[in-house]
Image (cartoon, rainbow, N blue to C red; front, side):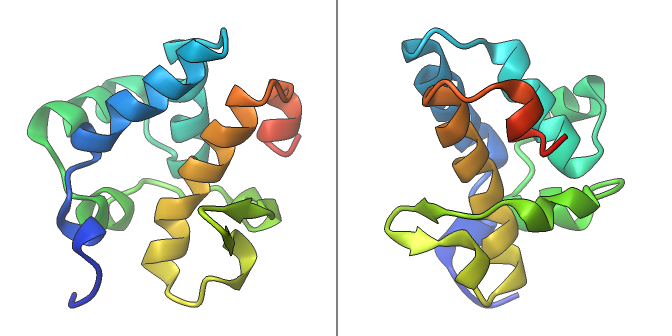
Length: 116
């Protein structure tokens, strides 16, 4: 797929930033993992395997077992852009975890983050 450089960047290169952002605000790696697994359908073991393999964002989302249908309920601004207005499907998928980790860092309850 031609497009943004982020598509070819490994999830493993961004994942530590998710953890750091969460932990700075008193949240945990387990909560980050729960969010990513909820969003993609990966088990924690499969997520860890993709991190070890340095899977690109493009492949990570293409191979996701079951993208959560409730992810369409994720709304709001991340990096100055409304997530729901992103037209490119892969870019929107990549921005979903950004938005959810941002909500986690802001202290939102997990049940609300996971759109329960």
